[in-house]
Length: 403
Image 1: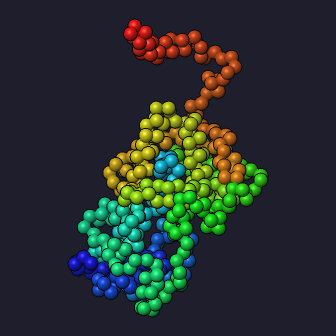
Image 2 (image 1 turned 135 degrees about the horizontal axis):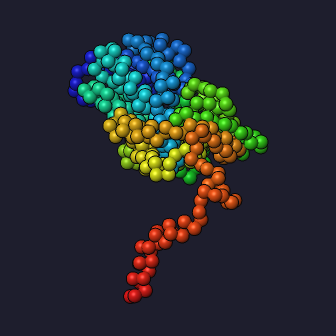
Image 3 (image 1 turned 45 degrees about the vertical axis):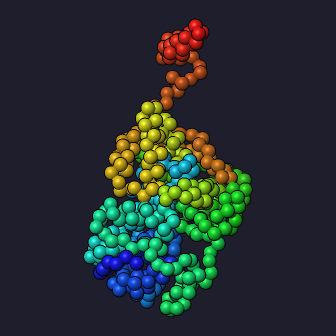
């Protein structure tokens, strides 16, 4: 273990097996005060009795912070505006939650006068990077303790044995068949029985969505309203950010919307199989793109789409507070000035189908696009346009014909 003197640590704490062991282990290994911090980002975990449990295991105090509104408004909505998707399908639910959690952890460390922070991420995953890049971006001299990279324990059975040895109150008695992470945006599933990329996910693991084949045989229509790229209403009724996303999660989940199964490339270099449920944001992504199709200039959209890939990678890798990420968010916000209007979607057995879009500043002109007679577009003008674009092609063909 690293030789360094630490006076006080703020531990990201859930009260589960890993962080319960970490709390006791940090007190024993570093001999310092440990303050626990639990972030509520919509994971639905039971917080009752968590303060007593943390204190019984050695914490001097526990902070429970409701970050749901901040999470949705300042992290999820920017990703929706960016149409951010990692490796074609992953909507970044876990990746977006880490910087808001780590940011508040640093704020508590400052308030407490703590000189170190600790997290429960393993040395193999992306989350260690996301947490620590945020720590260092906001507090460059902070000390970081990552127990999974330091302690002698190899797995869950070792942790359970440690709890029994030290009378640490936990309910875990055996390994779960997979690992889950939930927040207001999604649920992720990794590890265990999912590590075989050929094996279909067991149907009983899913928490937010019904299986598409078990969904209603009747489609449901939903209308989503946006203002400057931000979702503001469902079926004509305005909603706050947390309420709106929760409502779309319920609606989409009932129709089997938003299930994803992929093998992704972790930032640390290995491939990992992940299964995700993201019903609400799947609906929002489809609606947002449809609204942009009638409100955004073609070349502006192409520039924004080029940023979307870099934006998604930066979020996935943990660079939310890096200067390039802040610049991209500003640029993307500029593209959203006219993205105001409504989109109607049909939800049916796992499918999100756009069936209508309208906007007060729509660039779509029916009288210009019509196949019927019109008086504003001279079709003869297309001849010169085509010949100019064909000039280089004709020149190449003439050269080839001479050889």
